[in-house]
Image (cartoon, rainbow, N blue to C red):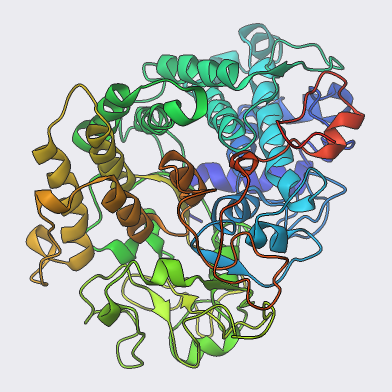
Length: 565
């Protein structure tokens, strides 16, 4: 519905069963040609476009049929639970000061809540295998789109104009995936399109993976399409600038290298040259028609009819809101909400007290100062705990989050009663994040940029949140120079970017993930009564362990420090 390329993806997924069961042994070896319907897929230009679409879709879809209908991409693990963006949400949000899950204990979600996971915890492996699956899809596309193969198949003339961009996009997706391996697991096997089928990949260090991501993405800044010249849902050069800003901003944490000047340079390019201006209303970024939102640089496309899964925004909406809430605030999925997650007190308290409460006569928060304070509070306690009791698996302990809604910006449902699946596209990269990255890089000592500039970036974000200044006549949310410091930036990132798959990375970068800052249930003794207040944990949790199953198939791997038996 939303784009031509995504329709082609659905054709490939449903009709051709492209790449079916490509990771049968849950390993990361290069894909075997025998497992692909190669010549059938690559016999037409449309087939190549469909394969590229599959590279994109691997980060948001869960299998070949859609809607978790079986024939999942990664056999042997739960199709819905293991969807990449859902798996990443667990690893980036459920272990932080933002979200508490009360379901999925058999998968390991409670280990994230209590921060006591180990290499055999199921939920740790889902992002790992999804990332390597996407890397292998990209490698396969690059291998099969070599000029000689295009000519031999008689599709070269039809594809020669666009193929350099297609290849650059596949390389970008692969670079993004390796950046997340670097972030989440530190090191891991390295595979590219030059490796022979059956080769067992060797492990690269975190430094080597970081260097690869930087080198590859720097090159892509000249190979991807110019800003806003690609069709919706596909990346252009701005995505490369954004990825570099994020990687450089985390360089000191990841590899001990000060790259704040480069982080500032690329974040500013996103802001000044990217042609993706801030949305006029913060709330519009997270709605069913956000494909019209000016701010989203790289969306993962969702569609209630053509791109269904239990990952992506379908998961975000249903997990964060339960069915009965629909009578107070239209979720866009009717009464289908699961309600298995709630907001931690630490996040709620980052907003002014007057903005924390939900009012039945103001379901969109129009009368709030900060429109980002999107919580549902009716019949809920603010606390995620009950004094004298162990962790309670009930949705009412802790506020709900209504940031993501499967309705349009004119506040209407797509169909009466809501759709079964979400049509809200997931913003992977957006310009608001670039404003805060640029400000942070300046405060951390970037050779360029001034405090006045950093303050301007932060206040622009707050103007939009408060609908003041250029965005409306609301009360000003401006801060002064004396209020601007790194602690404020960290809290502002929580207000602006909560539930957007970056919080763990942020907390680690600010030195607040394992020690020095505590929140609901952190370090708890498995949810026992009286252990909700949070405490410091071992620094080993700054990295996730490489999944234990990997060591049965790859003898070249070394486990991350302090996870070894």
